[in-house]
Image 1 (cartoon, one colour):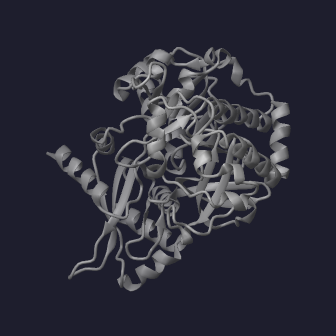
Image 2 (tube, helix red, strand yellow; image 1 turned 90 degrees about the vertical axis):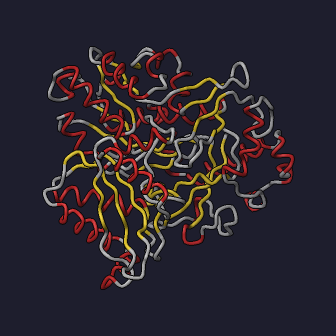
Length: 495
């Protein structure tokens, strides 16, 4: 761990050199692939040459991945690809991201080890290896196209291939961890882990809360520290943590509990919260991923013209992230957006998705703004939410436009009208475009709120085949499709 901390310090100090060296390593590997031959990788000597290779969305790379899933070799990466991560994205149909041996070991596993190394560096004398690590992951479903390849949630692929020295510290059993039916899985996980000595829990906050509540119901205890006295760390990612923090603190009830955020997507492990007193994440630069960035105010998908390397980015600017990886993705637009908070070293925050926003009226509302405003409304009305989503309410002859929100509360606000007012006020404070459109209700009126019964969003996930620990509710939509689906489910529950 000490050796690795030294290596992390090196890329903190020399980020551009590390990325440049990695770039040439990837190009050398890419020259041996069919994709590299078709895109003249043999002529690439510099990044300027590489910019001639087209940007790719999933739709562009899908025909290649389909062939790899059918057993073709050497198409995107020179080594054999047997595993495919079923993406947790919010698209209506699933994406399958290739996971190579190199990306599994030099990216995803390396990220997991670095997380623990940084944690121990920040918290000396911790004893996290004395007990069990509880991982709340997804399911792995066998891909029958070939005898020895399979697909599933990334977390399940990771669990399925863990080395023995990690496996002996992990709980629950693989049989339970890889179950597909999520509600039965929660039940069996809770019953099988209550008697374990758990030090670490890792998972998406929303599903972890469901699991924790079931553990307390079965055990009859009032908090998690009574069940697991040595619990000290919750590793989380996938969604903004702030709306869930109060609920987790109430369930755990330990002022010394530590929370660490990671950014580990199907496409790669990108960031780790490396400071105790800040929720910013350090961009991990030596995981076999070469990064590029598109300013969101110039974003035009694969037709975007202004694409920047790391040394060209600025703080407080919203960027779409583009990656080239040791998993065989080349100039691939991930779909996530980030904002750099520091350049020395490169630290950032996730701001949302390239397709998850509302800009119907020119307000440019992104997920980061929505989550900040929701957290503030919860704080000031002493409420807690489980899930939320929002969409535009279009202008009509008798009214201007507005935003319509659907929320599922764990604890209801003292005053619902005040919740809406605080939400609106905070959005106006942090988003000048929204504030301008709200001026005298000329373009956008005050938001309207729909409160739905507990379990409504789970029903939406189930209806769309997305019920599970790695799937997320789309926070913002520029149309009303998802919102109307959720409201329809809510109406059925009310009958």
